[in-house]
Image (tube, rainbow, N blue to C red; front, side, top):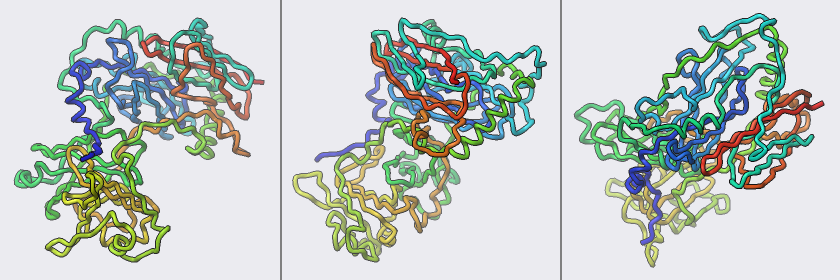
Length: 560
């Protein structure tokens, strides 16, 4: 019997060497710039390394990003890591007070490490000016005289022409890797309007600290997030008397879509659950439910925040002078125009690793290609031979799938899984009662599948036109919660703007790519769309080779 298995991260951990579970990780984050106005997008690129080897870490597949100011976390994000590299963005709230903030990045490995310093070289100081409000961080701003705080546009070039060079050609950049090693890097081109940036550590500083790092002790058994984020939760609303009815039951989380974001966990004796995901991208609604629970039990799954709420050291106050007025007003206008006119369609999506739940074997029935019927049973009978309804002793129906596991097709005998827009429906009578006129297509997967350690003989996914389970009623034990997934990796290259007529282009970051790959001896020629203003622009490239060698290049150019 052929089985397509969606492999549990928990089972992977059994095969993962103990040494890998004890990897000491450090994560460096580069950003498109260091100075923003409230309401801006902050773009970042993550480099996660095995601190003791100095090479990219093979362990964690997700890192957590927190922005702190005046002792509290004001924004957060998650970044998917693939072989130690990842990218994302933070939307800075428009209500952020003026001041300096600390951008912190860490992995689950770090949270289990004794004495881990969240504010070491794995963090950055970010300046935020709120030009629409007089509010300031408590103790976070120092007003100085214009005479003692002159504006000095421009930046010092820092070129290591033996390894990496960036050069402005008049209409774009040439990035040359002169070394004999491939490098993965982030590349930013932003407007240098004279607002002083922060003295942050570079990737070379970061790697130098990693090389001198001694052994570290992990304070508890580490469960690495080897396949993606481990979403943890617990059962809420139960009493001790209910526990025998809950322990061993399967809890599920899923997201309404036409994808395969479905995860399962067994409820343990403490009423806790852990869903081993392959990373779920974007902020979505999660459907939390317990299979086979008595509807009279008023209990449900609550999900827990994975963020550490790190204790971070305060940063130096932000120096504020009247000499910055014109530059800040220009930035404010640019931010408001970008928020008004720019959508995600103008950013370049970077490919991500996808889930492998369903595999390649799939039978699809687009219902608009067939005669439309008003009951689901008629749909099955008339043109879907892979599905049939079986009547139970109580008069309700369950659905069988014709499997292709053996040499001859046979209908399933064990439980099958019915999905509506990717969300499990365990009461299959609800599928039989659902209006087929709302369904765009039926996708059938005629093999044995595993979600966690729960097996199903076949899966059928009923995909509606809206992908939002229209007109479907959940049971009282189901909860719909908002949950923050990992950031969708994007590049802000401005390439799509060339096709936009009448777009008021006052972008401050005119090029950002977080995951550029440059081979040994290779020169990349990168077109850069210039905005609708002239000025001085800074170029910053930071990267690492596979063996942990840091690469840096900084320069500037002026457009007339």
